[in-house]
Image (cartoon, rainbow, N blue to C red; front, side, top):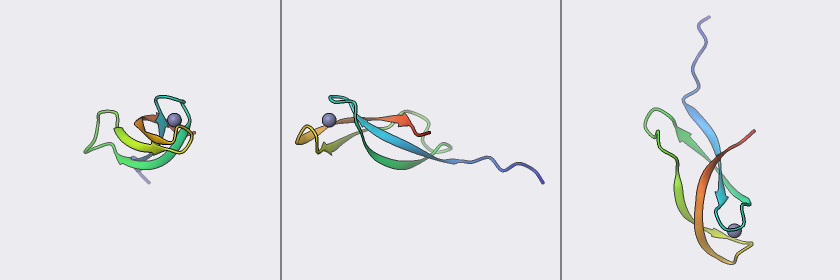
Length: 57
Ligand SMILES: [Zn+2]
């Protein structure tokens, strides 16, 4: 059995202001190679902030 490469990766989106990981999502490594950066609502900051991709373990 050949080892299947996992293309879809689970990642966390961390708020750049308070550093909390507020969201998890998936990313297809084949189609999206750069780091995700999204404006998301942070319930700790009570506003939309920039969230950046971090690893989930
Ligand atoms: Zn925050």
